[in-house]
Length: 530
Figure: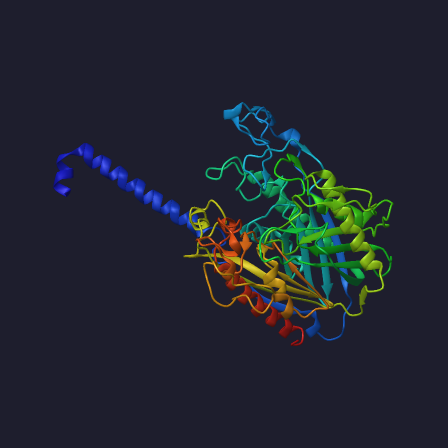
């Protein structure tokens, strides 16, 4: 072979070039598979309860507007009438950016190539900081369909170390009408046009909001309440078994000196997609009207006076699929209902939820926490990836960082007085949190359910909330015995259900369930072994 190549210089040069290309490609693939922050790991727990004396509880809040300026992006004309940019069907654009290509704000969620045409309401980063006996935790909510883990590591590494922040939990509201922050919807899946500058802006606003919330810390009291929500008029479960996240939990932080609300956080599981796939305006969907109602009040009839402060929504267990799509919602007046997916539906649903939240916090069942200590536990978890997403991760297209069959993610457990939070890095099916996992005939993995006991059963607060899309976005977290891609299908289906196509695989739920139980045990250990 060597002698042959010596006698044929052109072939020899071609062989060397091919070898260099193979070596370069292998090196590039290895670099992309490696991902950023390769050695980043969390395995920590801390509690103010373990320190001498009750200490003084502090709370602070801040928010930042992350709505893109549409004047800085290209505009377009939807000739095709599909609400998606399809130049092959005649759609045109104005090249405001001068790049020679269409550069709009791509919306995340539903269909790819959905470009923004306007703004219905601002999208936000909102942060609540709490501190007791020097232990500081910040809870951050971002109006986004989802953000990958490595982006949050960047934010944590950027924070001012003199603020001595113990831990930061991030969560995406999962609105389907904010700028794409994952790359799944930015014109095309492969070789997408993800707006990295916008993501860097969101990261910078996270840093600002977190640091300001900590600097705003002041002596405070905490009040919590819960409402059990009936699905009718609020949410649909579109996949059997029918199990909802029925707990709307809320916590109000009030300044001890001023008596005014610093912040109110609330959580419940439902997809913010009341405007559906035809929408092309930027909006946080029903969470916008929920937050506005809690802060500023809801008008009569049957309205409420607002609490003031900064209202912060945290997504709950929305897998399964919890949705307001095609749901009939009733206006608070009782005079009419809306079933069409629209801004009006988002407004009615959000204001109804705001009324429930405010009335619960002002009602007789609300609980004032006498000694709100602060504790947290956080752990890195490696989740097996067995679906088509493994190729996207290996190539660094999505969720960069391939750990030989696994993706790195994270679970958190946090205690604020009598309130306990457990985070999950995707869209958890409510049956994993509250019970009701089934092993239906026709499922791909028969046998007893793996995700038992229910996570909320092992939580130790008076109010226990499971926060979804937290510190990551790994898709649907589906009970293994309910995984259903191969025929015959469960529940009489004639085709595979939606969910598995946007999941890491059948073993993600068991891995996260086990890690969550372990983490809860560690949290309870540091706060006194409940």
